Length: 245
Image 1 (tube, rainbow, N blue to C red):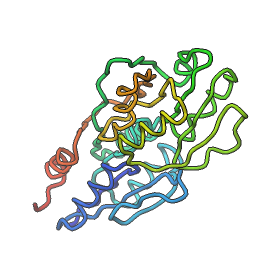
Image 2: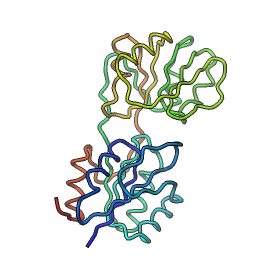
Image 3: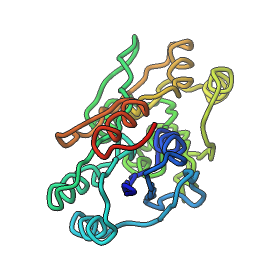
Image 4: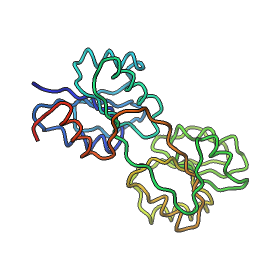
């Protein structure tokens, strides 16, 4: 019997996990992407793109497609999907795992804040800001005409006021390129979400240059099984549904 696994994707961990599970006998992996980017990096799996219609829609999908387990490997700052996945899995009785990479530990020169609003308020007048919160995290900062903003995102940022410029770049970034970027724009403050993971070049560059880092904390996560690594997720899945190594 083949176990059907719904992988809520959108992170590098999801792509790696899909690759690990792809050729394992006794498993069928269906990866789901929200479709928020124009050219997503697709995992090695059967893939669907788009929303489910909230928790109720996800529950219907799980039931109609005979899903045996759900692995939520969405971004650490995904606000709705982790809670929708919990509600849908609770409603259908399907096991759920949150694959969530560890957060970055605080470094010298960091200022931790709870959310975007606190990050906006934390910046001193006249700051030259490298904003790395993604396209969806730019708008709150545009109410500060006293700032000089360099907004970096994968997708186009859209129209910006005269005090802001946008850079479209996709990670990974090197320490040298981050130092060059911050130096050329005379950055005084870095704003980042605490996404965790290996992409620390911007943090290393800010520390090297003595730049203040305003770090936005992750949103709350629902209770339940959680893994920090792909290998832990594979072990959880093997225990839950059983499949050959």
